[in-house]
Length: 267
Image (cartoon, rainbow, N blue to C red; front, side, top):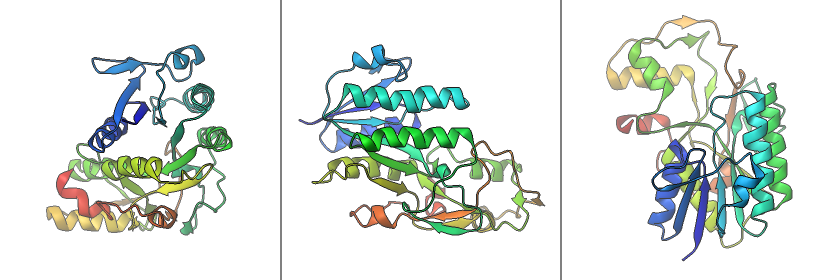
């Protein structure tokens, strides 16, 4: 039986563990605090990572705990360095973020597009990506994760907090948690591991903010949210782009939820 180690067993990591077990893997999870079925590991501490058991594949999907640059440097940059050193022969996937793309003109963005984030946190993600790619690992750039019990857009719409920024043209790039987990399984299970490659992991249909709220208004028979100014204080910066998943689709992966509005009934 093949063994997978998932470092970071939160909202996404729990689902990654589940899909690997369903596919016949021995799946072991690790988190900062550990738990009944989880190993305790501080991914930013080399001594802690050195104690982790051997594995055929490793997934880094630990979160920064909503921290700033210091937390990003520790969890992502040092974390990836520690995992690369501990598991030099394993298939390693690092779940990064499509926030590293800073485009603001509605462009279609592929893995070949320039990645120049305007926040220090984004630059640290790129540094962590470089560590993984140089070691032969794979980077999965995930867009905003939503899924059962978790959707900021839906929560704000239902609570009346939602605001359509200006004319609502800004594109919203998202990925369902289950599809993100399945993408990780797919990439690690490829016959030829795509060493050093980057893959965008995002829904197949990119909606504008206005289209999202128009769809939710139809589904829940409610009025559209009011218009307001753009939010320039977003943690990962204000961007306007369409992230393409064509490269990942080309490997044979297909999303269960091509569009955010397809999944709303189960959120």
